[in-house]
Amino acid sequence: MRLRLVPDETKIDFFRYARLTFGASVVAMVLSIGLWLAMGLNFGIDFLGGTTLRVESTQEVDVAAYRAALDPLGLGDVSITEVFDPTFEAGRHVAMVRIQAQDGQESVTPEIVRMVQEALQAAIDPGMTFPSVESVGPKVSGELITTALLAVGISLGAILFYIWLRFEWQFSVGAVAALIHDVVLTIGVFSLLQIRFDLATIAALLTIIGYSINDTVVIFDRLRENLRKYKKVPLREVMNLSANETLSRTLMTSGTTLLALLALLILGGDVIRGFVFAIFWGVIVGTYSSIYVAKNVVLMIGVKRDWSKPDGKAGTQFSRIDA
Image (tube, rainbow, N blue to C red; front, side, top):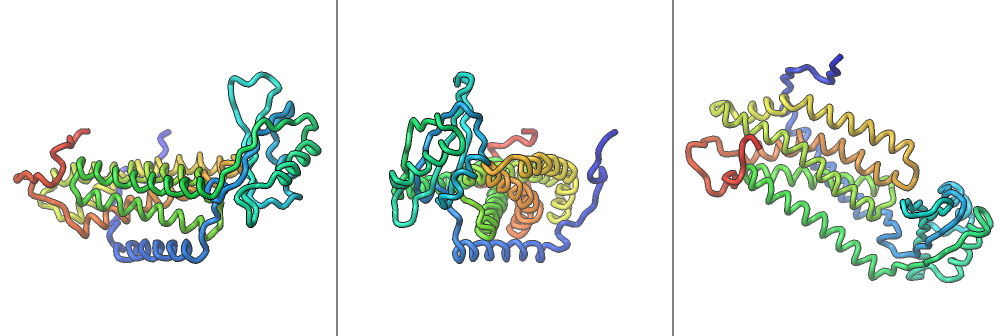
């Protein structure tokens, strides 16, 4: 039996409340930036600096037990990650314990490292060893923040260029506006809920950008086909038709992705919860922005309708309609 989330043919007027939805998006972005400036982000060890201990034991890694052993020490943000490696022999279990820099310190002091080692040996395994202890100072953390912001900026610039080559510049402006909307709202919700913001979150933001642009390109592809097919139909109606024709695909893709992410969010554990939450939230706002932000921007700017005259500035000379 075929599963249908929406009928085969829909005639939803996505622009009926265009001013309301676009205004709500602008207000949400302003609020997100305000929250970011007022409350800041709960940066993880990657951005604040701290110390990482490599832990080896003959006991299986139990993250909850590790955390219970370290909680009484009151060290603040502690991240525990099990290391998987097919080259490990049987009975060798490895974990990475990351401890944030304490107040007034660039990293964790040797005394605190010794306290952590003794607490883990007492609670988990007396034969536990610590083959390496590495510290990340504020300078390295600052470089990581700069590199992370650069990665997000470069990805947005590359997408802007790619969409311009494939479609017209109006489409690239709409697509990048939708991506900025998704990134800003994600940062806003992380600031509001004070969820840990680390390098995994940056990876999640890049994943959100990739997911959202894929969704937007699908709609834009259908829009481009329909613009060639219905040359005399007003742009707004062609956009509505394109969004309705791709609605089933959009909802099926987003729905199945969210189901998988929901399972990871509930059962995945603390290690990946922030990463999964960022993608879960990003899929929701990315689906919304593909329909209500990107298309609204293109509608406001307008696109070329007379294809009888080639336009060297359009960039579409590099695209194929069936690609």
